[in-house]
Image (tube, rainbow, N blue to C red; front, side, top):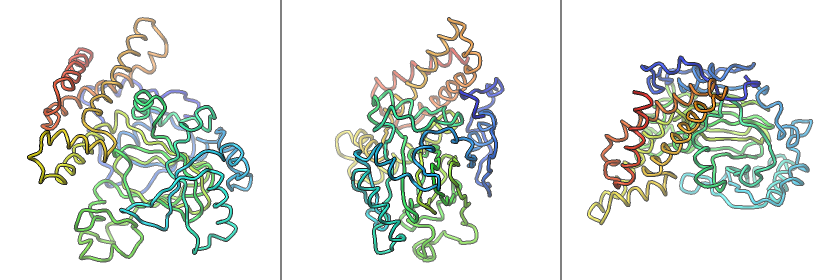
Length: 415
C-alpha cells in the first residue's frame, strides 16, 4: 500500500521449491487489471511480478508527487511557464515522430525552453499536420536535476536491481529513469523494453493509449527478415508475402487507456506501442529484480546469438568470441562479463545487509530479510544455469573465478 515504505515479503516466498520462473505463463492474459485502491507489495509481487502480468494503478499512487503539483496546470495541461522557469536551460533529447531512420524515430538535442516553445506553437496551430510532431523522449531527468525530488518511486517498483547497480557503477552518470513529454499524436513504435526488463510509466498529465502483445505474439508481427513491424496500426501487416505469420483475428492487442496520475506496469518481454492521446508528460523507469532476471539472461543469450550470426563469416579472426562480447555490449548495453558483475554487486549488497542486521539485531532486518534471501536464492540458481553456458565458459579465468566464489558463498547461505 502507499503507506508501506519498503518492499516487504513474508516467509512464504522462501519455499525451497519456488523460483520466480516456475510461474504461470501470462500469454493467455486478455485484459489488464485496474487497481483502484492501495494493495500490499506482496499482493503486487504475487499477482503481477511473479506472473509477469500487466496492470494499471489509479492516480492514488502519484497524488503526493511534486511533479503532479508543479508540472501540470489546474486544467490538466502542461504548466509551460513552470517547466520553462525550472528547467528551460537544460538540454533534452527530442524525436521526430513523422520521420523514420533505421526503424526508429531520429533524435536531436535542444533546450527544454526551445521544445516547450515548439510545443505551445504546435498546440496553437491545432496540431497542424504539416508541422513536425516532436516528442521529448528518454530524458535522464534525475541525472540532470538530482535534488529536485519530482517523485518517489512507488513501493511496488522499489526492488530495482538495474538502477541500484547502474547508480553504483556509473556514479550518477547513467541510469534507466526517464521523463517523456509530447503533444497529442506523438507516439512510440512497437518495441519491447531494454534487456526485456520491467518498466513502469506514470502520467503526470494527459492520456496514453497502450497496445500490448503478450510474449510470443510478436513472432507473428515480424517480416520475412525477422524485423518487427514499425507500426501495428499500419496497412503494412496486411501484406501476407512480407508478414506471412500475421493473422488479424488472433493478433489483436490488449488495449489500455491510461489517464492523468495513473501508472502502467509493463511486464518483461511484452511488446507494446504507445500513443499520446492528449498533451502528455510521463515518468518512466526500467528495472530488473528477482522475478525477471532470468528473462534478462535469456535476452542476452539471444542477442549474443544475433551478433554471432551477423559476423559468422569472420570466425577466423583473432579472439572472435571476444569481439562478439564487445559488439554485444555496443548493441545491447551490457555483455556477459558486466552481467556477472551485476549479479555479484547485488549479491554482495544483500549479503552485507543480512550480516549487519544479524549482528546488530536491527528490526528492519526482520521484515526485509525474506526479500533479500529470496534475491540471493534466485541468483544462486541462475548462477548454476550460467555456468553451463558455452559462451560463458569462454570468458577469462578472472570472471569465472569471481562467479565461482559467489556461488560457493550462496550455497553456504542456502544449503
